[in-house]
Amino acid sequence: MSLIVVGSMAYDAIETPFGKTDWIVGGAATYVAWAASNFVKPINQISIVGYDFAQEELDQLAARGVNLEGVERVKDKKSFFWSGRYHMDMNTRDTLVTDLNCFLDFNPVVPDSYQGSEFVMLGNILPSLQINVIRQMKQRPRLIAMDTMNFWMDNALDDLRQLITMVDVLTVNDSEARQLSGEFSLVKAARAIMKMGPKFVIIKKGEHGALLFHGDQVFVAPALPLEEVFDPTGAGDTFAGGFMGHIAATRDISFDNMKTAIIVGSAMASFCVEKFGPNRLKEVTRADIDARIRQFVDLVNFDIKLV
Amino acid sequence: MSLIVVGSMAYDAIETPFGKTDWIVGGAATYVAWAASNFVKPINQISIVGYDFAQEELDQLAARGVNLEGVERVKDKKSFFWSGRYHMDMNTRDTLVTDLNCFLDFNPVVPDSYQGSEFVMLGNILPSLQINVIRQMKQRPRLIAMDTMNFWMDNALDDLRQLITMVDVLTVNDSEARQLSGEFSLVKAARAIMKMGPKFVIIKKGEHGALLFHGDQVFVAPALPLEEVFDPTGAGDTFAGGFMGHIAATRDISFDNMKTAIIVGSAMASFCVEKFGPNRLKEVTRADIDARIRQFVDLVNFDIKLV
Image 1: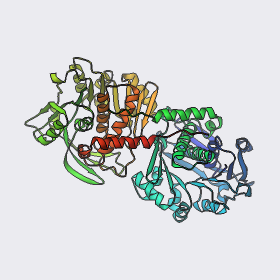
Image 2: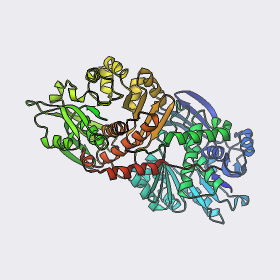
Image 3: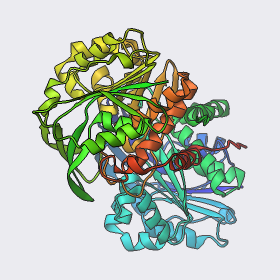
């Protein structure tokens, strides 16, 4: 059981109503790896970092069972850098800076040692690169999940549509689901997207939770109501990491097990937002995670005693 | 087991992206009564209507077990009339017309025959009138629930704060919870509102479901993901009607039973939005309701099978 994770590893500067940090590790694949490594080893990471990426960050991931053979270090360029400011509602943010730096050269190569991985999580990058990763797999993985964003719907729709035919699970947020499908109703949007290829569609609604669609089946998971959302950066990627980590650990791709995986992802995301960047993810224990998953059971569980 | 329902009975003109109606029965107490009468009889209705209110509408409610002794008919004034237009997201609307008409004279009187009712649902009206209803009850009801709105927070806050100390359950939407408490986090908002008096706080989030708070306990219910929300008018009142109908029918005011009541309310609201006004509520059967409640079980239920 191993999980390939493809995506950005970066540095972020983040401003929220609760605080500010000028330089903290980030990137989709970083969050996915931190979350998933609670459940499955190895994580076969594919990414690119610049000369400024702290070796300590890589060492921490390696200590968690993250295989870094597929992470290229570029000696003469800086790492991908993103800076953003969140509004009070924490659901909207302004991007202040996007310096792609070494990420412009990202051309993911699947190392031989990663071949045979059964599970793949394609973080949000250029759709043609996501396609290239799938094409490099000599054996079709059991489950390929992908994330994407509105930018590629505007700028690389043909590639994105081709990619979507090649994956099993698509994760998008609600506005992206609407844009991709042209449907306002999320039920209709999910149905339209499933017609494009993926058997499973996950629509992330941030503080309002997530929806899982498969055929005519639907599952709804709430987000944990939190006193304070300190920093939502990476919450969606952390959710995906928890989701795929659980799937890869259990090797069970049934709808029922995906429901559990959605709860695991939601639990991981609820930790992520408690501190800046992945700081909270770095410290949570398996006992913390199990306790939080039990909170989700209490949160949604009810007995029907009708009259 | 009987339930007093206080609030408006009105006519509405509604425009949604899916259609338009110029004249359809509405009003909070109408929706509450239609929803609650599936579960409990009698509903002891307290409202006021004008000369133009169709006798047929009153007869339909009477046939459902709604006691109309407390519904005053004003011979020389029209009924409360509201007109609104929903935006594409169905979460926002513009009010086009609010003609209070006979509702300006509303001074709810609790008929003698209503005394001894164990359950009271105070729909959204002037807080001083809601207080008057409670004061008229010779015996303190077992559970008093109230709805209110931002307008009274802006214009009658002192009365509202007094009223809040007198009730057991407060239902508000998310923006109202934030305004009333001054807290952005809904967890903090609910906690602040509970300190003002009510032991239970229900925060309605429309298409994103509802939250129930009681002490340190929280329950989250999703809204049913629907292909089409045809007309959201009255959904919140229908939710309250299903909630209080179930509570009054079971006479069980424990947190556990309130969770079931939240699901019952959510199920009723999911019917309400399928057609204009209360049209869908008028036709659903108990079997339809039970089937929909089972859909909610499937929607949120998951088995934890962790590794």
